[in-house]
Image 1 (tube, helix red, strand yellow):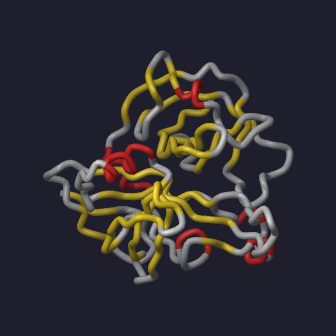
Image 2 (image 1 turned 60 degrees about the vertical axis):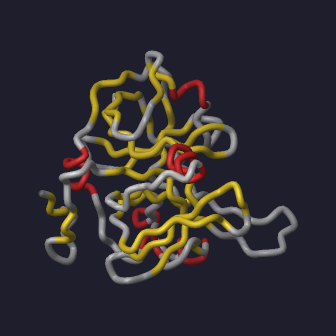
Length: 233
């Protein structure tokens, strides 16, 4: 059994996208069924409780025979006997923030498969926990029912990414203020191409979850370039 801290349970076609970090290895994991990319929504209730970010849970997983194209973090769900263990400390979550830039291989909201095909699969990264700068929220001009998060990374590169975190979307639709004192789980999709093949294949970046810090916790920033720890007080 792998013990994961859930860092995303977001909506996707056919169900949910779950992702988290293995607390033993420190590796990102995206559990998927053997015959699908989406976890059935009903399976996200564990012991009658909805799996939410920062839940620590146990799940049986196996590695696929071949890495999923551009998503090497994917693991096959061995069984649905999942167990909730505890809640994870938000302050401990900061240890997993990653200031690698650009975020998920490129600046902007998408990555060309050609870029990824030029890398060994060991270098594919499709999940990253980031601290955004100058964060704001806006409607998606292509889908008015969706919201986007606009922000800068630690080097000043700008991103405008679609939000698939259902709770954050509902709060924004209700006109509620969302704290800017947050970190974001960014996920990279599998390659997608329009049905009419009018545009080239691309992998999109999504905000799969946002993790808000309570009042009294101040994120001061990176201690030094390359370190993956935030200073909190």
